[in-house]
Amino acid sequence: MVPDDRKYTQEHEWVQIEGDLGTVGVTDFAANELGEVVFVELPETGSEFSQGDTVGTIESVKAVADLFLPVSGEIVEINDAVVDGPELVNKDPLDDGWLFRVRLSDPSELDQLLDAAAYNALTGG
Image 1 (cartoon, helix red, strand yellow):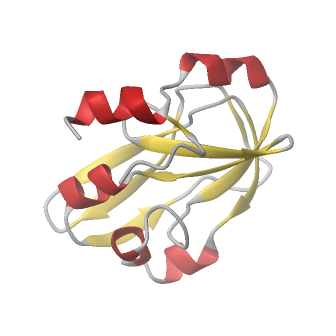
Image 2 (cartoon, rainbow, N blue to C red):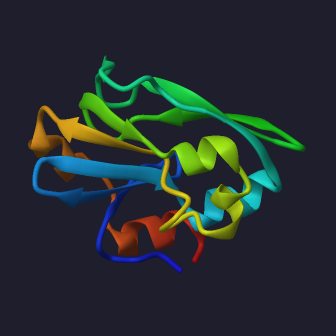
């Protein structure tokens, strides 16, 4: 399922916008491809990054994947529940398994991301 209330990257992250904040997570597709997630390394709050920067990693029993930032900005919150229980990424990647929140520094970057239909086409959904 690919909700149409958010934007997507080709690297399988999603961002849901509320005002000037974006909540970021990985897609259902990515969670399934990774398999059982056992560790999540997230960026520190207060850190600033540019669109496309590597900001952390997700480790599963079969792979380690980089996390890329969909939009430039400052990390304002991380999801401690995912740090304490990385399996949340598999159980609920689109809601409770969100990873962090970013304050957007350039909202126009959202135009470079995929909508739900384009992401569905990318993943063969």
